[in-house]
Amino acid sequence: MTRWFQVSLENGWLTPVEYYGPVYGEGSNLQGWSAMPAAAMMMGGLGLMPRLDQDKVHLKTPPWGNFSMKHIQFRGQSYHISYQEGTWTIESDDAKHEYPFIIG
Image 1 (cartoon, rainbow, N blue to C red):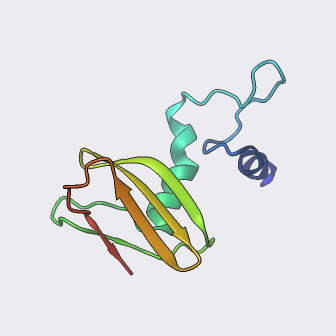
Image 2: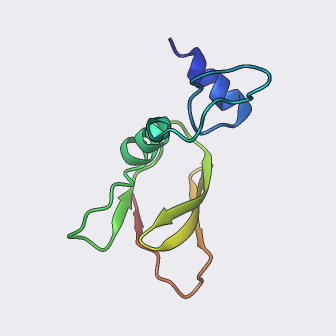
């Protein structure tokens, strides 16, 4: 039941495999529901669930350990977020922008 997830991880794909064939590669990534595993990781695992009544988001330590995400769009800004060996790194294309994340 989890083989599709293992295949995605082994190939570095963020979306699940809906159909796989050598000619078509990783499947149809353009379907909206394909982003559900990524949303589950970001919202449930990291706590990246923005609320309209708060300016900051409290990130949680990821239960799976080290990770790196690039080009995360959040409130009009693009971020690179990573967690390596207990250390968070958050970068933005706009260095003047205050980060809306609280760690912990």
